[in-house]
Image 1 (cartoon, one colour):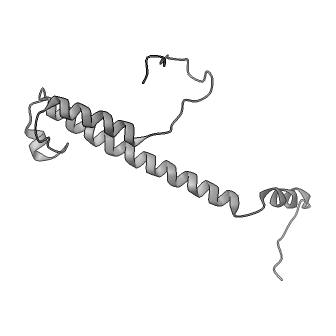
Image 2: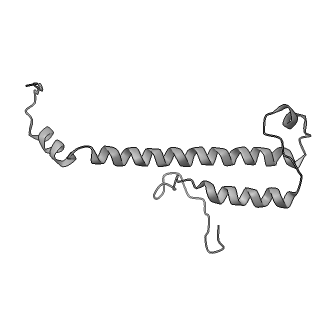
Image 3: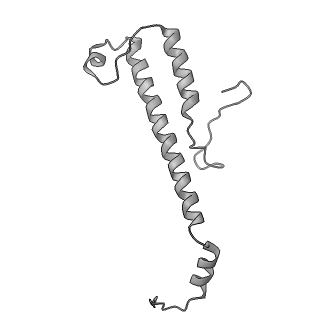
Length: 115
């Protein structure tokens, strides 16, 4: 985040919803720099027995959780991309204005017939 950006709290329901878009690469770059700067050596994966054996105050414990959080961001980003691709495929699958006109022009009782 740059200095010119400002994060403010807002009342529930006020204004447009905040963006749900995720970007993995900036998270990866940030964590890579943090881990290199911390210089703690190997960090056990969160939840593994070596991680559980770390003291609660050991910085490697928190770094391991942050690294797993990076994985979550990657999963969310790829899921969002897949959903966007699916949305585009649905939009291109039919002439939706024509479908809407056909539906609006039907009588109250409509039974589709096959030829």
